[in-house]
Image (tube, rainbow, N blue to C red; front, side, top):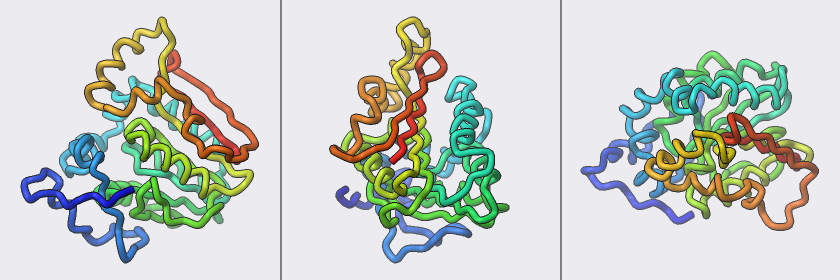
Length: 254
């Protein structure tokens, strides 16, 4: 990914461009990745501006956005990870609501939970939610060029991120998630999906996504496996859809 240019002084997120000190528990880096241009241009109001963080960091808000399905989608991922999560887990990008604390609460004593995000304001926000869990580490990294070695993690979770990324970035994110999971480990993708023909949300969600989520319709028109690196050997791919096809969970075992 090319480096993003610095935001102008009049930009609503200009104050976020100076790489403030990392939040407590965050692993520092000598050179933080720049916030990508597509994120600045399309999602600054939801993920980069402090007011947006305050607005969306409410359990009822994230549940409303997902039409009352947040808890079920969260628990579905948790159940896939297991009642007691062993090994090392990576969450690719922060999530509003109690997703991260719920994963942290299930960690076995010797497990480790790493969370990455490219935006410092998001790391600061999640740090408050996981402060009671000592085996969680935050990293300021770009999902499309992770800094972890190959085969680092037993589990990688990508929860409602892919629909927010343009195609080239999405392909790199999928490739990176597959690269850093161990052979035999699993990558869990949860995201939007094309609803069934007779699901009324098919006709409600299309204009919403087209207006607010310009890359999201790719989730309706493609399979997540379409963005896997060509020729990558896989042990298993398991896909489930829910809520009349509006949501999908794809578990890929490397």
